[in-house]
Length: 172
Picture 1 (cartoon, one colour):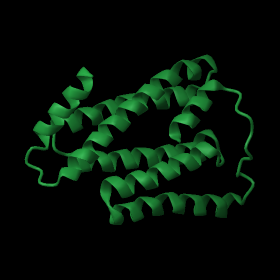
Picture 2 (cartoon, rainbow, N blue to C red; picture 1 turned 30 degrees about the vertical axis):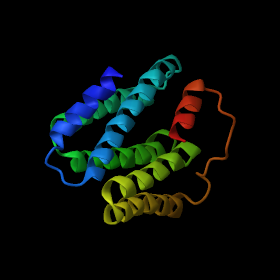
Picture 3 (cartoon, one colour; picture 1 turned 120 degrees about the vertical axis):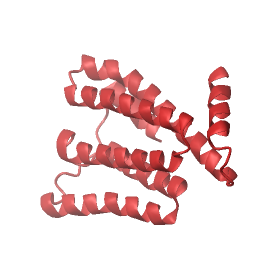
């Protein structure tokens, strides 16, 4: 409860001159989404370490640092739109790294990140930027399937690792 009051107090102070009350709701949503993401990543780190998923471990540690810095920017500056763009760019980079580096194909988690990017960009940044970030994820898939065909489309398999199950459930 103390953390929620602290966040609301800082957001009220930072966005005091903003005339649109929806912007405070968007900034509050962004802080809560970033904090929840950090929590899930921190819970997933031991699983990545135990299962020797070094790429995911290092990427996740980097994500925690980036998301923590973005929360700080949200709480101490009125630059919530810049943070929203940076979050969309980070999610787009997650999609690219999943598709081209780690998984080398398309799995359900990649599609979840694509849906997350589309929904977040429309809600936080409006139609123009929503279309832009949707096009980024769509162009990625068109490019990937034009180069590799449908073979990289991974069939759904039973998840054997609880870390991936946790991330999968959190994304929904």
